[in-house]
Length: 230
Image 1: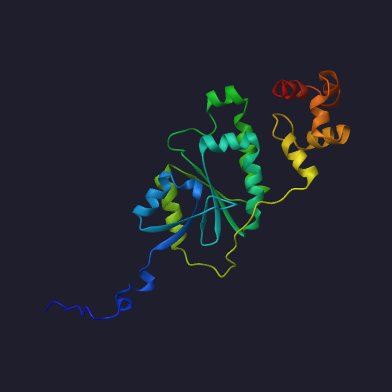
Image 2 (image 1 turned 30 degrees about the vertical axis):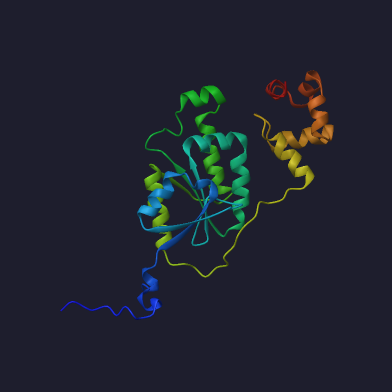
């Protein structure tokens, strides 16, 4: 016999079992137009948008940065990814997702290498740096749907007892900020940036230095450095 529902029951008595409630994932506001979001929703995941200072997704207190291959390469050159990886250190658990290996080769993008002068071994070295220096595991996904499936599996894992942290960007002192700016130029690593700051004292003095003077300080690196400044 068909069950008769008592419409006079309190509304709360019709609520689903808490165990059947939707799983939740926190996503940064900038991910709203991502195809990953629509894929998560299709898997019955509730996505809560927030302005995250660090990472693109938070899943069970795991900070996750998502990069398409093109974004990964460009943020590697600009040093933006290095800063993001540093900020992620505030989370005990963290992941980097590199998305799109189904459609784009990570190491043999000849057009990108031609434009940016990036050797495939430099990419391999940076990936090793991510794992060994920053201790951030990397997941390579085929496409946005594959990325979403990884996030769903993470959301279904039992939550660990840990503080629900909302991390903030790491604040640099003046010297660190100057060094970080200089390291954004091609061929200028930490060692060269420190040397320039030690010799000239400020970024303004470095920019105003003559080509010969810079060549004496940092050699052939000064050519590309000066070209960008000009």
